Image (cartoon, rainbow, N blue to C red; front, side, top):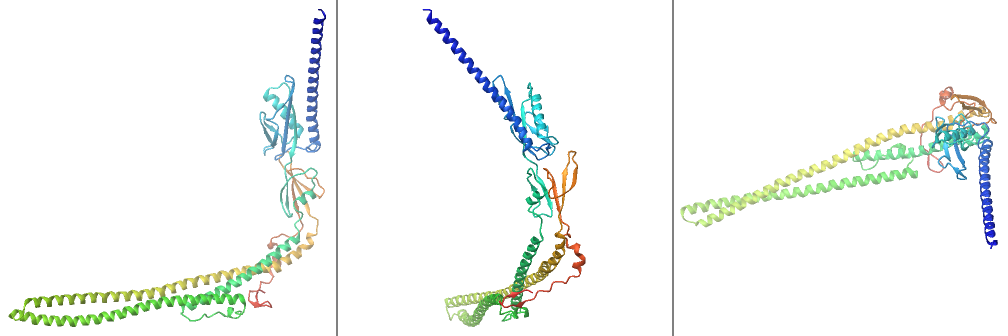
Length: 475
């Protein structure tokens, strides 16, 4: 009987020992995890100082940093992550970083390790913690650098650790070379030649249009082309323009003639109708006189009793009807004369409208020719500058461009002032630096070469000449 209680006590003691061992193992695991986490944060800060965070690097505006904050809570036997703080932040123009639960933290002018200490201390004071939590700050993105001056593509570029002036120059596409300018001048010359060809065709088109409008205004039967056009009438482009304008001239002349002819036919018809009405009036007048004479004789006989009264009444009705027909014919005659007057007015309006239309078009065409002459002169000057002036200008720069470029670094110090430093290709570049690249060469402003440009020849005027391809050529 005593063996049964003994076994129960032994089993209970065994279970308690096993439970104690489990609790101890759990506590040891969490402790090791806490130590590893704190060591990891310290290692992260140390690694950041050597790679992402250069030793002694001072933060500044536009730097992006990542904040990590963790805390060991013994009461819960766990590690608590401050998720509201663990994020990426950008240093503002005023040098501060705004953090939740902490507020504004001064970052500009301090290292990442110093900012991490500020974050832990500020969080402890604002929340009322017993000790500051473990905080680490690493640099995610450095503030950019700027490359300006005689480079292919100036602007803002991302900073990379170990960046030198030569590497920054490669980011900006290298030096601006004279070959680039030569290609640009060549493109401008080709474009100017094309523009001159189009201007010349436009000028020919306006000249032929002007000749067509003048022929319409003078009611000529054929276009009188100017010598500038007739000298090159065999060229396909000019021949096409002349053919089109002749077709337009013919269509407009035939259209106007058709309209005027229709109105004149209408007038002739009205004239014939008036002649018929006039003859009808003469006939009615004769008829009315005959009826009046007969009525007078019958009335005399009725008065003497030799004729009956109905005969007199019948003649009176016949006389009234004849007079009514005469009045209607006279009204139609007046209406016909009115229609003839309207027809004459329509013919005059049609001719005046065409004359006014042609006059306006002629004035506009002349204005376009005048504007085209000014544009031609400008395009010729641009072509001359691209083919003659610009290459001679570049020839004078060729010797100076072979000289080594001049590098200058502008760096903002901690007190807000900008420091200017002479640099070389191997000089180290820091985040936020502005690199200026200069070349010992003349200014791009043509005014700097006034002595050369004053004595240059003016571009020749543009004239048409025939070449082997039978096309418009611009010398």
